[in-house]
Length: 158
Image (cartoon, rainbow, N blue to C red; front, side, top):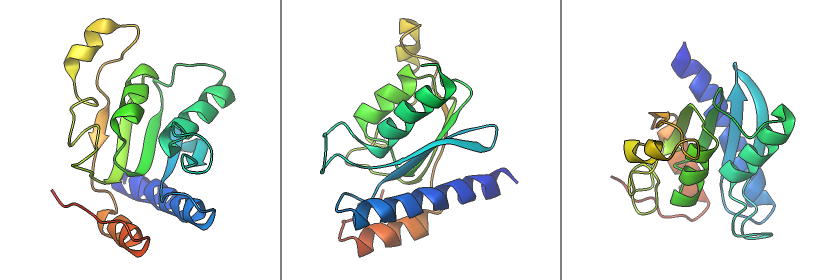
């Protein structure tokens, strides 16, 4: 049952990624979910607005406003693509409990390339960084890869 929930949310991330591309930006979408309810969703706006406006960061910003707290420890972050190092540090600082993504990005990922999402050493800097989140990878990977390829992005396989 858990994988079905993950697939449903990743497919929503892919819909958001399509909206981002349709708006002229890069193909990224992210959600923050709490108790199986979408709290916030966002697209990428880094090309059009601000380089720090990655979908994951935008979703976490919205979730903090909705929940009225910077502590997202009861939340799961979903993304159609592995969070980059910048997003991964923010995930750790916002205390996200679980991260689920479709595609690995071994050239830029905060999990595959750099060990930010799983670095237990960061936890010694509490309260700034929480314990590593649970990470679930490759959910709807084939569909996400096809979407990136249609957008003209080269997918680097692990």
